[in-house]
Structures are given as C-alpha cells and as structure tokens.
Image (cartoon, rainbow, N blue to C red; front, side, top):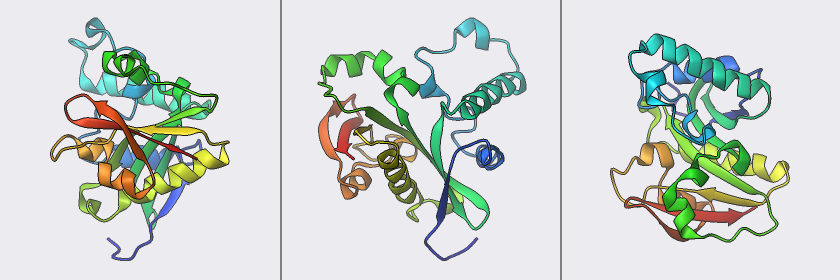
Length: 198
C-alpha cells in the first residue's frame, strides 16, 4: 500500500471493466450490489431471488452491469493507488439511475427541476484499507469534473447526516459541503438531499 497521495482516477468503460471487476471482487459491504441498485426503477421480484444460489444471481448482476457499461449507460469513477483500484464513485444522469424517482420519499419532496440536466451521485465504495484517506472525496471531485465535461447541470446527492447511517455508501454531508453542495431537504431519517450546479 502506498502512503503517497494523490491517487489517480479513470472512468468506468469497456477498457476499465476489468478493474471494476477487481474492485467489486474485494471483500466489502457492496459485493452483493455491483452498483446495480439505482439502475433499476423497481426491486428485483422476490420470486427471481428466492432459492437462487448467490453465484447464479451474481453472474446475472455482473452480466447486466457489463452490458450497461458497454452501451455507455453506466457511469462512475474508479480511484487507484498505483494500478490497484481502491475506490469507486457512481454517478449518472437521472434517466440512467431511476430508482430515486420511484421512491415515495423523493416524490414527496416535490422538488422543482429547471431546464438543466439532472445528474445523480448515488454511492461510494472504498477498500477497507483505504478508508479515512480521502478516497471518496477524490472520486467525487473527478465525477464532478466529468459531469462538467459532459455538459453539466444540476448534480444531486444523498449523503448521510448522522454517524453510522451508511456513510460508507452515500458519503457524508461534510464531504459534499467541501465540494460546494448545498442542503435542499431532509431525505428520510438519516440522509439529506444536496445539490450543486456545475
């Protein structure tokens, strides 16, 4: 493990798919998700999950994620220490990550959307050995630069507002504050919705 910073980043793509697989093949809380949750407007039906061995379900999830990546319908930033992928930040346009829209909490906020494109930053994954070293923030900065390069718009995030509220996945309010996001509304019991124009 290198003690030097800065890290480096690369976009998720067909060329970096192998690194994404290596990142999500590491032990961690995210290994059953592969960042597919927010791509689906609704949960996978119970009948499709019950009684199906994990290996079989995983193969299906990975195949689905890879197909979206090849079609440029899955976006994210891989953070590296040398050649080793140690972090991940998923982002994408609203239509690519529809699960938020399907939730009652989000609908209940009645948020106004202007003419700008709406982008979402949904989750972070950081190798356990690299936590509390700025990996998530480094990935967030790269994601914002990528969104700006793609035309920009309103960027939305859902960080944890209290300790222990899955900040590992969603990031913290202080991290988003540091990158110029502003609080818009409470988002459930443990999170807040924040936005920034880029």
